Length: 91
Image 1: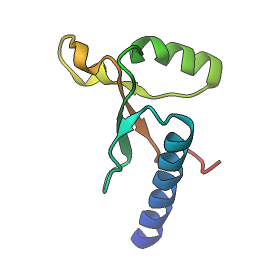
Image 2: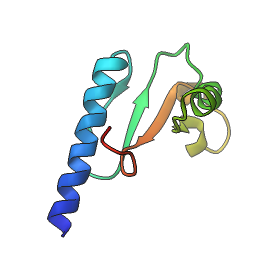
Image 3: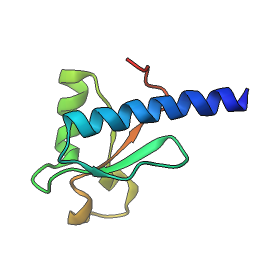
Image 4: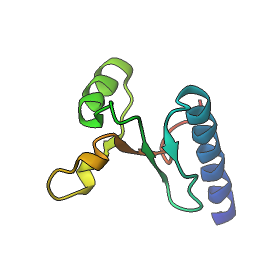
């Protein structure tokens, strides 16, 4: 059962990595070796707090803006975000 789950999550991760590389090549990220999340950094001109509302309303896409993981505000994470591939369908 665990091996099947690992295979399923790896497939989901690989699809997300492929999609990010194809459709958002300017996003910097490291391919995770474990866990369910990809931490990414978009160009500094993009504010992920503002992008979040648009993505959710217009595209039905959700992510967590990077500043949600901090106490206070920092400019160096305003273009960062965390994506989960755990519950996303492969499609």
